[in-house]
Length: 193
Image (cartoon, rainbow, N blue to C red):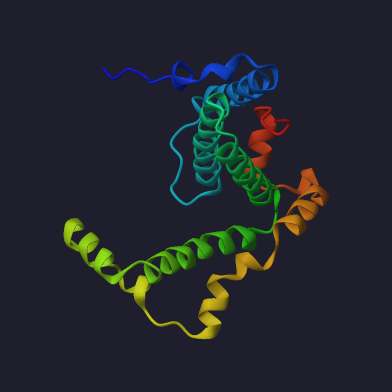
């Protein structure tokens, strides 16, 4: 039997300051609503819209935990940096979940491939070599294959919509035309969060 680790036990001395306490409380309430409703779900198919929601909620919670930790230990600069990241996560998550156009989700998935390729391309060759040796397998060919300009553009299409435009367009989406995942979120009252 494993014990569940509670990060609240590691929060710093500023945890009782009013604004930090309110932030921590809000984060905890949002996460508890998600955990409660996630338990009601059955298995989630990898790569599905529901999988995207669960994955992004876990990423959001990891970022929120880091914000709480930094804020309560008076690490202001890292906290503000993570708050910006969390805002970007919120905008992107809302855009993907609320958008009835499935092509937006596919653009996001393709961009992940472009990002992996960029990380490998910008990593020192000796580091890549050491990683592949330690992993016991070579990098997949798609990671290092030469691409045409059109192929690169296709993979990087997600970046063409800047964050401010995405936020504005997201606010204008009709909630009644949302994909099934958002309708599920609405049923479990996650939308208002």
